[in-house]
Structure formats: structure tokens, C-alpha cells
Image 1 (cartoon, chains in turn blue, purple):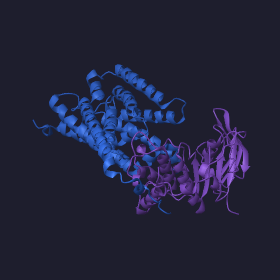
Image 2: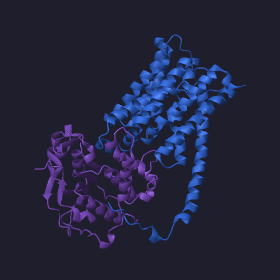
Image 3: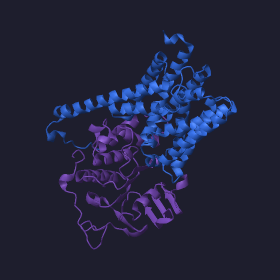
Image 4: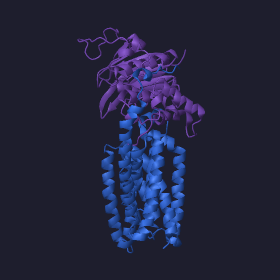
Length: 292
Length: 254
């Protein structure tokens, strides 16, 4: 049975490919700031957006984009100005988002449990032709934006105060990152589902960290791991008839486990053999400073 | 008359209603090397953070290079070395990646060119970390991480270098190396303002010392006698180590 023979699988695979690229590309900056759970918080808020779409009879993706973006900006503003710590702000969003979502779906006439589940855990048949267009445009915009402001974003996430003194538009970049995280969540929710979308933003990055030393290298490996997990997860769920989100995350975690073992072996080899290979007599390591 | 590099007048800063700075004046002329001294909580770090605009002034006026702060955008003229701690984050970054962010004040959104990469390599070489440029910052020692932050501040060849506790938790050899680098920059015409607990090998470089206590300037003038520097307790002076001749050219040593 060739999965590519089905239109819905073609659409699901295109979406998986784009989501596998966009989610870790944005997620790496959240991990860098130690805000790994922010994607989760936004995912919960987006549920309220989806439910609002059911209630109003509009496309749930659109209301999810709007509500998730507002929620992400609020989280960021609380982080910047509030006395509440970032983690407490996230917790409030978690609870508020889920409660609001369940409440609104209860009120809506047609929001059945089945469609709710497809938003929570992803669904192969859920990706409509319109969804493919929306996902392509949004993930293309996300990747293009990062190609332009990625260096600045790295500087801000690395050291916010220094970035201010370097004259970077720190507040704007922080808000931009929050909105990009919200867009990523809504882009990914059809395939991965709202409850698991954050995993695709974080786990490939964690996987890359086991293997490489630099930020750029981390991004490259994370994108590869993200695409591998999302595409193979979608394919696997076609054969096993399971929710793609769950399988994508299981594959991603499997990659992480393999990378952890690989990373330990590499570091062990470096420690055991590296010193023997590279340590010359002490005198020759003493370098004169380069004159200015 | 040349403009003062830093012109801070009547600065008052409050955290949660508690005054951290009260009516502080700080004027720094070109080519001065000013040490801001004081005990913990005296307001010395607050003072330089206020000078950089990182903390808003409740009262007072600030001008940098003769330009009122609100209109100042020439950030390439300033190199800032924050307290160590910001050197590592959730995702590993190499020495070169971190130092490269210093160049963003100049490059903006455009892609880095050969000249930018050379400036980054030069800054890394200045602090003696060329052989570690591709390594993750988190694998470096405390003194080496401090040097990464210094290199980052040097990438735009700043006219004013501001350092917050650059010697805190840094071993003696690295302190001597830092003193040497700062000496070369000062000879090249840079203005330097640094916050310190102890000056150590940097003592001969200092042209002026500002001593803070309780958010006010206690003393502003000639640096303390280098043989009997006593920052914390005037009753119990302790000598400062003069830079030993053999401590020159030590960035490469650990």
C-alpha cells in the first residue's frame, strides 16, 4: 500500500516536512532562553482559540492563530514587566487555556469529541488543502524571518542586557519570538496536535545538543532530527492507524535516546584518547599573545 | 573643548522604592581609566548600568559622547563587559559565535562580511583564545569565559569600554592578562570604566578612582595608594599585588 497514492497522505507529508523544519527552528531560541515549556503554554492557549472557532463557526486555525499570538505576547509582557516569574505566567496560561478551551467547546453546538481529539493529538486526514496552503505560507514566513533576524535573535536570547547595549531592538525581537512561537504552534497543530506540539520544538534541539558544540550546528542537526521525526511519524501512523502526533514524539524521543548514548561515547573517546593525542609538552602550549 | 565621554548629573535610581543611587554625578573625559570601587551593595554596579541606560533614571541627566541619552544611537562606540554568568545559556554556543554577537551593533541585519569575520578573529586573538574559538563556551574555565565576554566587547573597536567586575572569580594569571589587554587599549586611546572589588594587577592603569558607599560617591579623585589599597574596611588595609614582570604575556597560560 503506497501512502503517496492517497491525496490526504501527500498533504500530511508536506505539512510534516514543513512543521519538522519550522518547529525546531523556532524552538531552539526558546530552549536557549530556558523557556522550553513556552510552546506548551501557547499550545494550551491555542486550544481556547480552536474552541472559539467551533463556537463562532469560523475556521479554528484562524482563531487559534489570533488567540495563541495574543497569549504569547501576554506571556512575554508579563516576563518583561511583571513581578510574576516567567514560570508562573506559563502556569497561568496552561490552566486558563485548557479551561477556556473545554468550556467553549461545551458551549459550541457542533464541536464533537472526535474533532477535539484531532486538534489535541493531530490527525492524518485532518490536513485539508486549505491547511496545506496556510502551513506552507506560515512556515515559509517563519523560516525566512529567522534567516534575516536569526543572528540578532541569537544575541538577544544569549544575553539580553548586552544586546541592549549593542543597540539591538530587544523588546521588538522578544515580541517577535513570542509571535513566531504562537504561529509555529498553530502551524504544527494539525499534524502533531496541540498537546504534543511543544515536543517537536524542544526534543530535536535537545537531541542536537547531545552531539554538537555550537549554536549553528545545533540548529542544523535539530532541523534534520525534526524532519526525520515528523515525516517518519506520519508515515508510521499511516501503517499503524494511530495518532501521528504521538508517533512523531516517540520517534523524536527515540532519536534523543540514541543521540544521548552516541554523545556519551564521543565524549568518552575524546577524554580517553584525545588527551593522549593532543597534549604536547607544556612549554609548546605557551603561546605569545597576538600583537594588536 | 572635547565632549565628556560620560556626563551623568544628579542621577537617582530606586529599586522598589529603595534608593540605589542618590544624586550621583559622574563625568569621564576621553582617555581616562576610571575604577568604580566600593563594597557589595554600595551602588557601583548600579552606577555603570545607569550610565549604559540599562536602568532608567528616576532623576538626573545622562549624556554619552556629548549626546543626550535619548538621542544616543552610536552603540558601536561602546563595549560592555557584563558580569560573568551570561556566558552560557540553554543551547551551547562556540566562542566565535558568542564573540560575533559583539559585531551586530555594526552589521545590523546584513550578513557578516570578511572584514567582520576578521574583526571577530582579531578580538579572539587579543584575549588569547584563538585555539578555543570553535569550542563551546560552557567547556571553558571561569577566567576564559570572562575573556570571551571581553573579546565580544572589543569587536567594534570601542572608544569606551565598560566592565562590570571583570576580575571576579578570575585566577591571578588571567587577571594579569586582562590588565595587559586593558593597558594596550588605554594606550590606544580608549576610555575605560571598570567596577571592581580589588584592582590587583590593574592598579597601575587606573588614572582615577570613584568610591561608592550607600548609593553616593564617597570619594572621586586620584586612585588609592597602590601599596595600601583598602576598599572594604579602612581600618584593615591589605596590600595589592604589584604586577610581577613575569606576569606579562600570560593570556595563553592557565
